Amino acid sequence: MTSWTREVASRVAGADARDPVDWPEPSFAGGAAAWEAAKRDLGAAHAELEEKVAALQPEDLLRWVGDQRDPAAGTGLPVGTVIRGLLQHHTYHQGQIAILRRAAESRG
Image 1 (cartoon, helix red, strand yellow):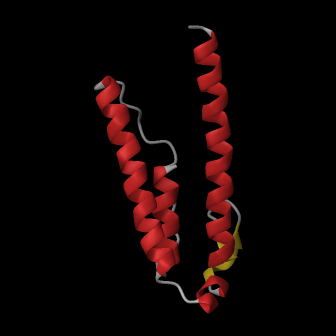
Image 2 (cartoon, rainbow, N blue to C red):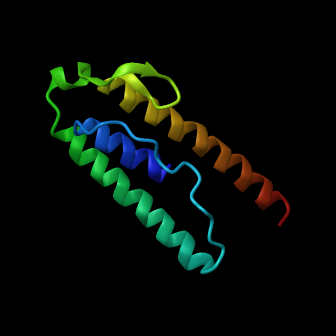
């Protein structure tokens, strides 16, 4: 979620699309401290995106990201669509997290 948030913030700011690291190597060292750091990093990425979105003018939402449609890279779409896509992406993952949390809690 953090990688894609930063990628969308970059695209909103007008940078060329690139392929973010979807699956960074997990680190199980650090336990709770590492988890807290990951959550802070996601929060920082969201703050970066909010700053970029706040600077947009209404017409910027219609600006195209990239010049060719590439569904895997998320290019060839208006900025507003890319932002909405990120919201849908996060909602999907939040649902997964909720299911896993409920399963973990039911096991005690």
